[in-house]
Image (tube, rainbow, N blue to C red):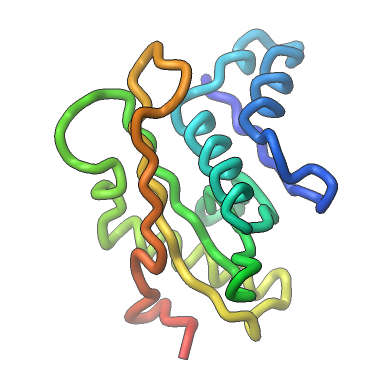
Length: 163
């Protein structure tokens, strides 16, 4: 069973998400929760990457009944709320990990983002959807590739939330 560590980040703890996740997993009393799976590792690395690139992390692993948002961040250079989907591949297969964010996944992310914006009363904010693709081979200490796709897709159809 994989553990789900959700972080809501305050302004004082913007750096070292991957290290925090590792520390939290090591100290968990439930031995099943001491394992960090590839997705969590990739999300934490992506959060560190975003922080280093002038983003403020608001939440990691935000869940509700309808789905999960991997990372919610604010692009401080553009005053934009960003919903980031992170895809981590553990193999050296061809293709980019971000290619796995298909139309159906985009719709799920869009619905989850809309629910988040409504719940937090943020419908007035500028928003966008980014994807970060990470290639992190098994046994490697760090990723071999990190690609950030800004404005990777737009909300559409029944889930259009931006004018």
